Length: 201
Image (cartoon, rainbow, N blue to C red):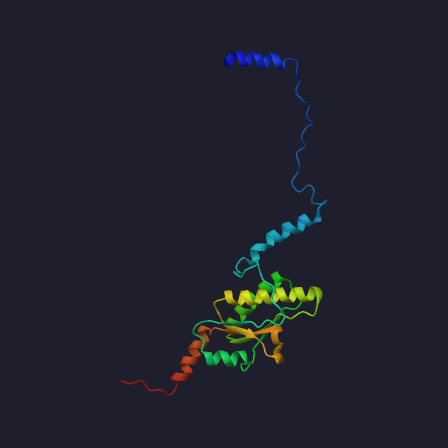
C-alpha cells in the first residue's frame, strides 16, 4: 500500500516545478546599528550593568508614597527611648545625601554607596533627602523616590531604624537613618566604659 501511495504521489506531482527563492544574504555582525542608534545604547548599558551587580537593593515594583506619608521603621533590639529621641531629631545627622533630580536607578546606587561609606566612617545618624515634589513630573519622581528609600533602607541589615525628619531637616521630604555601630565603634565604647575599672581577682 505504501508503494501505491508513492507512485500515486509521483504521478500527481509530475510536471510541478519548485518555487524560485531569492538568494539569502548573509548579514554581517553589527549591520543595522547605524539605522537604530538606541541599539548601541542598549548594548552599552548591558555591558555596564555588572558594575553595580554587588548592589542587592530591589529595582522593581517600587511603590509611590504620598508626600506627607511618615516613614517609620525600627528593628527589634532598638530601645524605645533611643528611638523616641532619634525620631524627634535629637541626634544631629552627621552626614546628608540629597537625591533630588536623580533617577530611581541612580538613587538606588547612591543609597547603597552612601550607607556603606557612612558605616565605614563610623557614622550612626545620617539624613537622606528624597523630596516631596511640588507638582507634575517632579511630584511623581519624588513620590517614587520616597517609596524606593522606604524599601531600600529596610533591605539593608546595617540600618537599625529610620523615621521621617523634623521640619528643620526637611520634614516628610527627608528621613533620619540610624546605622548599626561599626566594630571599631563598639570596641571604643567598650574601652571607654572599662577605663578605671579594676578586675576582681
